[in-house]
Image (cartoon, rainbow, N blue to C red; front, side):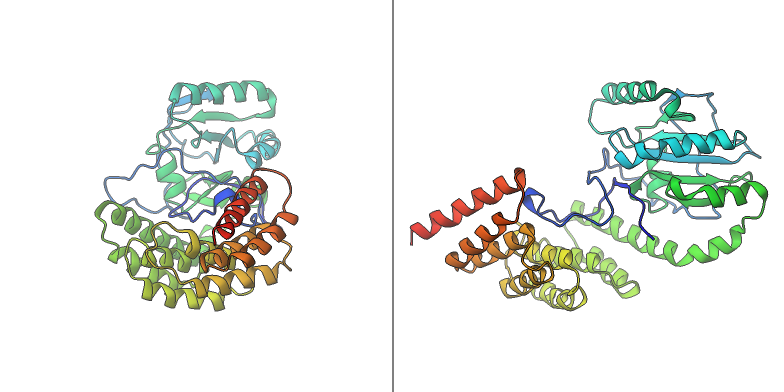
Length: 376
């Protein structure tokens, strides 16, 4: 099954390679930071199938007959979107058709992830977009910039990090389904005709909900660590998460903390060695590990041997035909004072990189290597 496209809206502790050097994800996505990160005063209650739907609160109603609360006895579809999100725009005709086919359902699209700091400008952008779409958005639309109203109690509480994302709330006020709106037709039909087995769905979703709880615990621990400077709880939370559900992304996050702010590089390299094995068939994982070790500014110590192994593996997996991977490999050779090799690999990287900002950055890096060689 081909994954449906979505736009990513939340991250925990991103590891970015300059000039967008990481290999694009299989699922088309737009990487962004959350428009506004707000930490709740108390631990946020999680949200999953079978739970009572959170309160419906908005900043402003944009289109359609307003409601102030989710109506008892009515089925609601609450969909999260943004004007900048391509996948959200592409699913609008489907949502329009859903509303047309099921007039008894209240479909509401929530703009809760707009970019920018000027609230008036963001609101006007949404209004203009919706007005221009006209009948292309044949359902209700609201604006909810305040994270405490919709983003936190709905999206983040449910562990949802990408849009578009829909919640189906049944007539009893319970969350009956969560997912991409393009996939909701079958469950919606069953919810409407009474054949949806919510208890069975809750049981089926239990493992994923448990994983979400772990991710939430990690996120909270990381948030606290950034405030206090004490990363012990965050490290313990990450280790627990990895034990429950081994995941290379979590391992790389743990490495980043151990070798960075926690100043425990020896422990970091043990985890890195594990990633060399567990991620050996994934070029993106290998490249991410290598680049992080080579470039993270908080690392006071770098294990370039591990970085080199990871970078070489990434290049092997991509048959030395991916500029981003070769660029990483060249950077590691340069850090090892093998400038001649770094120049050769960087030239190879340029040869398989299309024109654009990334290639321009690589050309500047090559000049840096060449200048360093001329001084020796």
